[in-house]
Amino acid sequence: MAAEPSSAERKTDAADAKRLRADAQRNRDRLVEVAAIVFAERGIDASLEEVARRAGVGIGTLYRHFPTREHLVEVVYRREVEALCAAAGELAEKHPSDVALEQWMQRFVDYIATKRGLATSLRILLTTNSTLFSDTSGRVSQALRQLVDAAVADGTIRSDVDASDVLHALSGIYSAPDTPEWRDRSRRLVKLLMDGLRFGAGKGAKSGE
Image 1 (cartoon, rainbow, N blue to C red):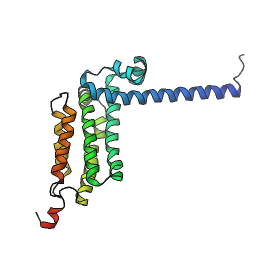
Image 2 (image 1 turned 90 degrees about the vertical axis):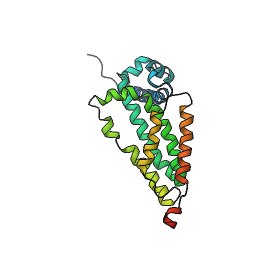
Image 3 (image 1 turned 90 degrees about the horizontal axis):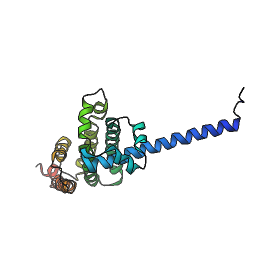
Image 4 (image 1 turned 180 degrees about the vertical axis):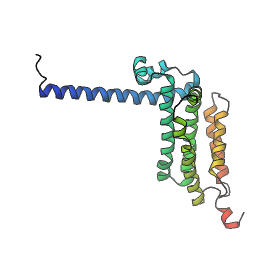
């Protein structure tokens, strides 16, 4: 009969397994992080081979974590939604309410850039049993409303502003032509939108306008 592994050997095996799991998790996290960047840059032409290469892993490692492009897209999209929503609270703690709103809207441009790159796969996911859209529905609009309501309450933007109107204006960025200067133009549009939101701030409640 083979000898039972010693206590030291069992500890070594457990440590090795833990390191492997940690390495695998780091690879997975890195793939998701890089995929978001590549999809934003390349759009529908982004290749999984490029994602793997820029993440510093082999394509086999990518497919072990994400068997299909749609698996990767779903995780990336969830990550983007969660990061954008978390940013609302983080920015509100660090900046005046109108500045927090403007910086969040600039981050929204990056979110839209990634979403545009995921568009084809997101449409495929709509036809599956994925809970992606039910899980994320309303979260972005809720984060925006939090920021808008705070800025209205502080008097740093107009009192007649509704968060749904702001989201509608921002969502127009998604359908803008995909040109090389798209992101720069979108950031300028955010600044123009903020100029409009700040115009006359605090006056309406005092004058009844």
